[in-house]
View 1 (cartoon, helix red, strand yellow):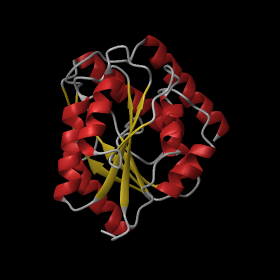
View 2 (cartoon, one colour):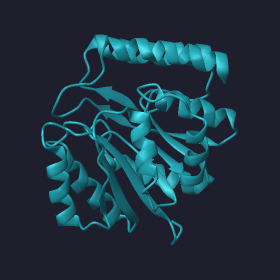
View 3 (tube, helix red, strand yellow):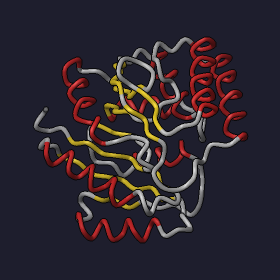
Length: 240
């Protein structure tokens, strides 16, 4: 690794008080064992379950240099959460991931090593290539996810196997440039980021990951998000 490399994890949260302590501990262990400089930016959207209070305790434990708290007044969308967190990140590499244990930190060393090997602009975790997989979902949820990716792949031809995935590593300047041209705010945000990045000529490599359904709490995916996704695909097809 470059001696100057620092990894900033952007971690939007909403009702994740049970997941957050273990996830932060795993991230701390992963970065420490691999001798990496790191920080976690927690963007909590006024979780009613007390997630922010847990985050404050974690900040006391790991220090404000490692755990940076940038809460917001309410649920304002996933895309704006990343924009908000990016303003306060000090790393030259940005990691985006879910706070519900869908994305395990154990895959980060391989993602980081792959980025280094090819000097890639973006590394994206994929559930749908090589040894990647999905665990804990029922058949309906698997079919929705796979169908969403096939639909987007057919319409947009992005050249990646998991367009709806949200476990990624970006060069900071790349993410800043792509976000500046991205219009989506909700669940289509990740998809638009990748489509626009590919359209702008940035290099992308995939690393297989195992996606595991959330350990605690309820999924935030509903019919409204599915409709939003379909509209988002067609909007990108017309505009990108």
